[in-house]
Length: 458
Image (cartoon, rainbow, N blue to C red; front, side):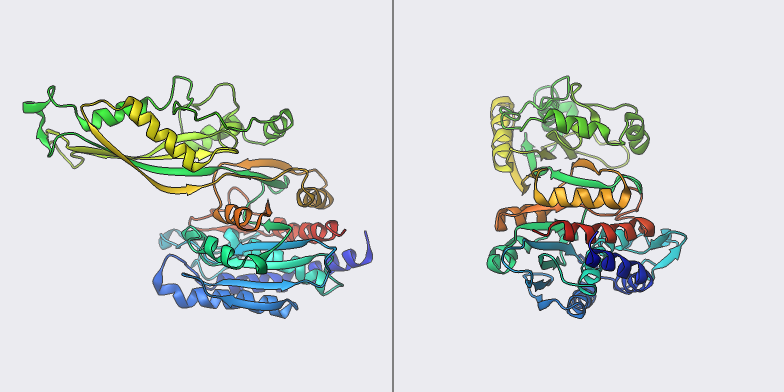
């Protein structure tokens, strides 16, 4: 280990208490992006990050406006053109803290209990951004950064990163990079470092089925008029076969197959059938029998019914034949599917299957593309070695079932791969009361990121 790396690790260890105090200061700012009454808090949280960047010697630090909440930018390009440029992404906004009565301490008055620090945003993701900030600070206070860095810290992730894509497109030259580090992920356990290398995409649609021009008396017209609720239920039921495979025409045509290496690595993940049953409370697992459950929830595409509405749903009885029925449908997508093509497949299914006794319409409400990073990427290799140095074991490689808009925006707008990592844990109560951060894991995460930056040195 070279001297500057050793000095940076020692700096991080000697300054743990200050790092912790500063994290608590930041978490105390209620930067709730969905609440207009917290607009000033959002601005304060952004300026707090900018102050951190300035204090550690970053240049061109700006709190930049968007159509919504501001983006914080900073850079240090002193490593020269031969060194890679890493764009460090994060977000400073947090979820609302309701229900407040379920918190053991006020959500914006951070409290330490044992090895955990509690507060809203502690894990998602102020703690993760702080790990990145303090890793870089430790390096610059002990020597010189071996790579160029840029910072992109947004304030709208918790409301869908509504303006981030436009911001990236508008500032492509400013944000140009070789790799993006996104610590908005987590670990399987405190002893199992984890790298997420793929995210599923999303196509979200609303289907409406119409029958009569108004609700009808089910006794007078039932049997002669096709019930829209029944017709919609039949259409939805036909969207899967008996083995759980989606039946939209061409749905699997472009699905990138899993390699034997990937399947072996996914099988290593500590996600057992019993754990899933316990976590979900479901009586049994379901889905494509030729794939493990861990593959179904991260590496296979799905179609899910997210909501159904029709007719009378109040207390008591009302015998109506409803005039319309509605369903919300989402498809989680994997490489190389696209949401636009999946929507066309949904339309084709409805055109082929919908009976002439009803009318229907479908709207595409939201799209997100899947993302995957080459596991031989220099960033993944550098982080893998860093985690093995700190934890003593190689990291687990995971595909995440959800979507992160920033990853797609950065990939599409800048042509850069995103390296997904983080030091949150599955039981951190993210988005729930008593959100927490495991401090020993967080401290190891700072050291792992220090090693990561040095491992990238050309």
